[in-house]
Every structure is written in structure tokens, then in C-alpha cells.
Amino acid sequence: MDAIMTDTGFVDVAALDDIPQRGARTVATAHGDVAIFRTGDDAVFALRDSCPHRGGKISHGIVHGHGVTCPLHNWVIALATGAAEGEAAASCVPRFPVRVTEGRVLLDVSAPLAPA
Image 1 (cartoon, rainbow, N blue to C red):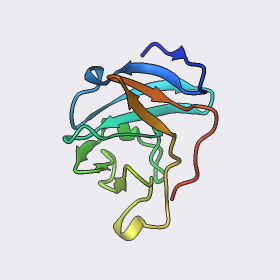
Image 2 (image 1 turned 45 degrees about the horizontal axis):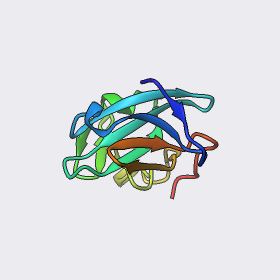
Image 3 (image 1 turned 135 degrees about the vertical axis):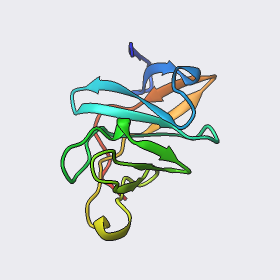
């Protein structure tokens, strides 16, 4: 994805329609690749594109509800918090602030947020 910097600190990274529902696209940042997820109800979330277990690309996972299942070992990660669910609950994925304005996806890449 091409990125355009805005005056608010957020970077315009894509049109919402560039991200398929129940899918993801990635953006290269100074903090590593960030996966931007779009759910079936058009909610948008951004997480570091690396599973805490084996470093798998969670952008390749299956998006269901507001979660994604890692393709390497089936851990379910909550998109809103970056927290792994179930047995892996102690492991987490850093989040990034993201918002949609006038059909454009804006990502704040200044620093990842700690998992909630």
C-alpha cells in the first residue's frame, strides 16, 4: 500500500475498499509490518503483523467476528486488544491507532500501543 502523511500524525494508507471484508492488508513501517484488518461489519483494526508464538504473519490468518486466527497454530487474537485468547492469553500483539475518515484508512505509525 502507498502511504500519504496527513497533518494529524496519521498516515493515509488506503481506501477502505482496498481491504477486503474479513481480510487484511499490510503496511511497512519503521516498527515493522502492520496488518490492517477489516471485519465483516466494516470495523478496522491494526496490529503488528507477527504472532507472538512463532512470528507467523497474522495478516494471513482467518478473520472472524473481531478476531483473527493465526495460520501457524490456530491461536485466536482479539483485533481490538491484540490479546491472544484461550490457553495463550498471556501473549499479545502490539496495536496501532487506526481510523476511517471519508472512506480512507488512516494509521498512526508513530509508536505501537501496548496490548490491552
